[in-house]
Length: 172
Image (cartoon, rainbow, N blue to C red; front, side, top):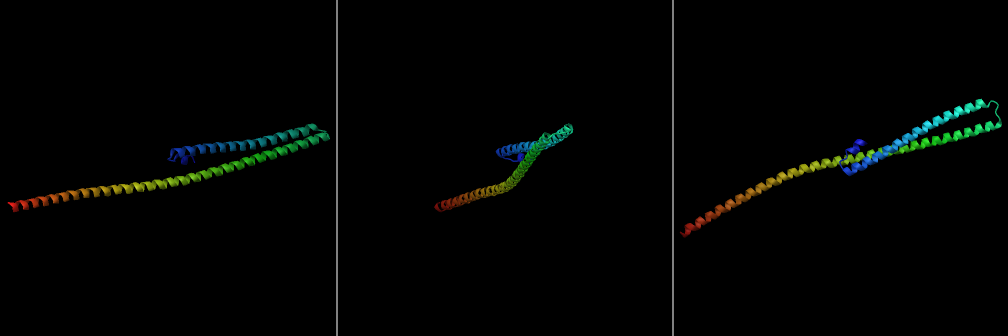
């Protein structure tokens, strides 16, 4: 994607594309970091809850009914926290997929623009060749026209001299 954006000839379009590309990359990096943090946080919380739950169960020994209720509440909170974390991960993954789709779409657009530019370049080279041939033909026509003028004036001069000689001989 970087290479295609840098290869664009138009400076303003190139700047715009590179700016968008940077934005998309930073957003992608942010989403990846959030996904990693959510994933790492989920594992750390589960491990902590497992250790604390085991320690509380082991230390409680003869537990009362309140301890059972507190453990149940903790388990519910942990389950809810786990569900929220899972939802954040899914949301991050959805956002990551959307960003990736957007990047793919931009790449396809850039590819289409690149092909259009290449076709335009080829047409321009074809036009340059045609113009060069036209110049040669026009210069050849100009030389012929100049030569024809010289021949015309030469013949006209010879005829004028011939008429003057004939008139001079008749009068003399």
